[in-house]
Length: 209
Image (cartoon, rainbow, N blue to C red; front, side, top):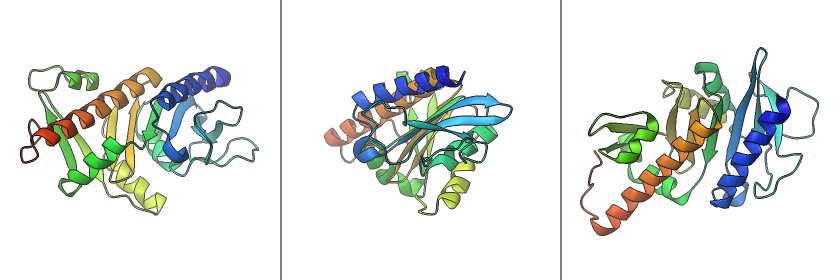
């Protein structure tokens, strides 16, 4: 199981790396390995995610602490993944920093959320009704990670979801790696779409509340 999950997460890392979503070693990924005991793989801190090595991930426990003897250090935001797995049935969670999600988080940060309505790709979030509305929370970027994790946890409501951290990045989660990646791709599509609209209609927030 561990090897299978390792390869699954490595494949996701490779695909997101091809999109150039890991600038400056930023970002982190996690995948659940077992429920009893609660354990998951998470990216090791400070690694070049464009390369595939035997030290890309390490196994951690329900508190984000290494579950085995290792010289590797868990990613700084491991506590965000801890909160997701503690509160949901998610099997995979992804955190990336992109220019688009950072700019969107700054534009709408004072509102505490960005809302999209009537976009076809919202179906990726399992919203199928006509003119569906999607709200993505935006939280403050606390430098103190436990404080960040606490603010983050307040917005974990379902087994799938997405949360923006202002000027930091987006974290998404889903029942497996496919679903988490789907939500991440849909979110980034919406962010880029909105920024393109603002380029042409800078004084009109079209289809965004």
